[in-house]
Image 1 (cartoon, rainbow, N blue to C red):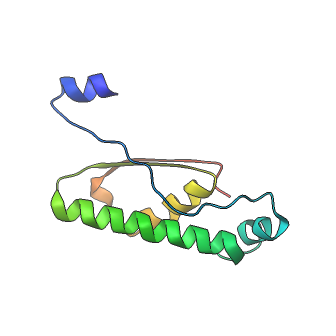
Image 2: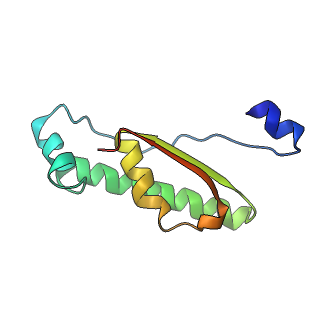
Image 3: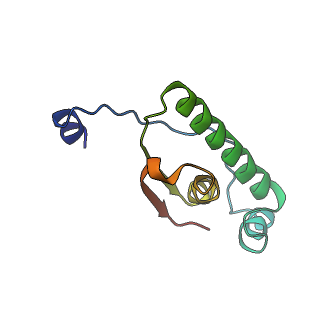
Length: 103
């Protein structure tokens, strides 16, 4: 990807999103993920924090560079964070969204 982007005159940056992800191995967190639709208990609070962090990151980046195009990816709880966040973003700026194991 880096070679293709460079050859076409584009630059890119990858970023990890910091948020307090929780394990679903604890039964109460699994309940929050499965029954609560990702919105209950510690799992829900964690997803909510991730959504807030991703929305803030997006807003700050767009403020500094409005022409930024986006590729989002998430695995498991991260997929839930991305799926709940991207619906509020400018879809014309999103190139790709990849979600794996969205609980």
